[in-house]
Structure formats: structure tokens, C-alpha cells
Image (cartoon, rainbow, N blue to C red):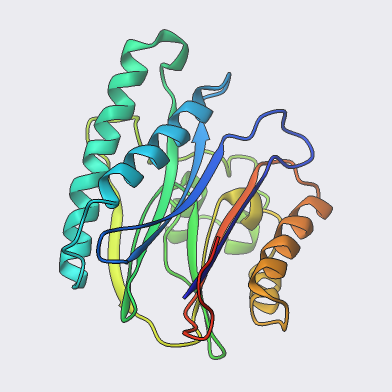
Length: 250
């Protein structure tokens, strides 16, 4: 299993409020995390940094991660702790009041992956047979699509696309979607912020992931593509490749 992380400020924003990391616990199991902060005036930066740091601190000492049930339980309990820390900080620091962050994370076991998300940062699974979004955007536009009020094509450039219905650190309880699926050799996972998916289509993502480029080159190509298409937002991704012939990571 190999991992690559990339984050880029983009071509317009003066600050990068995204954070990304891949962490290993005591059992040697990987956790990939992407957070996209919001709140402006550095508050989003604070929220995403706190989310990444806190979840790393909670993950690294763990050992009981052999089953999907154990991973889902850990994720549910940990996300509530992280949510409380961010909310308490925001409520006691006036310059950070109202801040929050999206979060998408994946426990990457050799037999399964446990995915959790809140907000509109996404996780996809790709292999030779399919390219599948494993997460559901918690956004107003996505609710309009699901209720049939607008078409999926209309959602791509909708004027209220950035309005989130859920985020970490904004309410007393974090309502995070968590589920597990089986994985197999050759699978790719990509976790990313909307700075990538708002610019690079699913078809392009899939083509780049299945190309002959190295994992590092694929990550760089995706970042470059989003910037070439405008780069109006921060662009962040974590790639995981289930290939036993590839050792290590970065």
C-alpha cells in the first residue's frame, strides 16, 4: 500500500485553509484525512489544523482496528471528541467564532476501508472496473439534486454550491456518515477537497488514476489540472494505492 498527499493554495486564494495527512496506528493501519476549513480570516485554517492534529493524536495510539465494526466505532467516538474541541475553541476565541471544517477520512485496512465524511470533501474508489464516489455531499445543492428539484448537471456550477448543511465544529453533535466496504489489490482511493472536484471531472479523475503515471505524478497532475481550470480554491488530495509491490509512502 502506498500513499501520496498534496495540497496547493490554488491561483486565487491568499491562504490555504485545507489540511491533509496520512497516519499509522500501533497496528500499522493507515488513516488518510482531508479537511477543508471555513470561516474566513484564518479561522478556517485553525479549524482544519485542529481537526487534523486531534484525529492524528487519537489514531496513533490505537490497536483494535481489525474489523470494520471496530474502525467504525473508533471513528464515531473520535469525531465527537474532535468536534467538541473545535466548537469549544471557537466559542472561547471571538476571532474564530463560527469556524468549522469539512472532514473526510479513511481507515485503510488491507481487506476493507472504513470511510467517514462530513461536509463536501469526498472519497472515491477506483479500479479497472469502476469509479465510485463513496461519500455523499452534505450540501444544499446536493439535497436539491436528491429531491429532484435540479439536475445533477445543474449542480456543477450552481450559485449556492458552497452552502453546507453539515460541518465539523459548528454544532454540539457532529452528524458524520460512516460505512465500510471491501477492497482488493489494485484499488485506488482518493480523498479530496472540493477545490479538486469543482474543477476536474469524474471522467478526468478516473483517467488520471488509471494512467501509467507513478502515484506521485498522478497527484501532481491532478493538482495542476485544477489550477489550469482556474484554481479558484485550495486544492487538496490524498491518494492510496492498494498494491503490495509498492512499499512506503510519503
